[in-house]
Length: 141
Image (cartoon, rainbow, N blue to C red; front, side):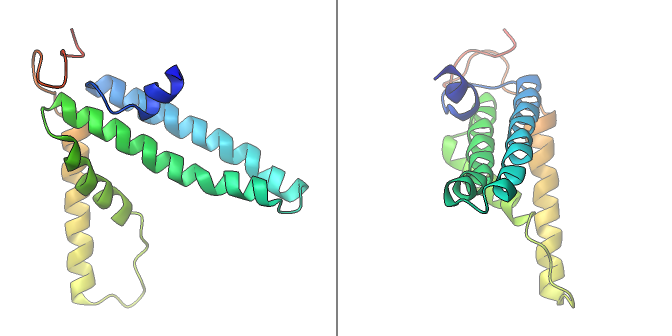
C-alpha cells in the first residue's frame, strides 16, 4: 500500500526534487512493464490477460502523472481540480498532427506547445509555497 500512496496518493505536497524523482521512477517502472509484457505477448500468442495488462500501462502512467501533478500543485497552494487542464495539455501534446495542416491546426499546435512549456516551468522549475500551506508542511522542511 505504501508504494501505491508513493505514486498515486493525492494528499500532501511534493517538492521539485521529489517530483522529478518520482516521475523518473514511474517512467522506469512502466518501461520495465512494457519490456516484460511485450515479449510475453509473443510467447503467449496474444493472450487476452497479457494484452489487458499491456493496455493498462498507459492508464497507470496517466493516473500516476496526474497524482504527482496534484501534489505538485498542492505545493504551490493550488487546488486539485487544476490538474485536469494540466493533464489535458499533457495528453494533447501526445496527439500526432495530421499531414497538410491547416492554419487553425497550426495555431492549436502552437497553443498546446506554449501550454506545455508553461506546465513544465510551473511544475518542474518553480519553487512551491515557502512554509506550510493548507495542503501541509513545506516538503523542504
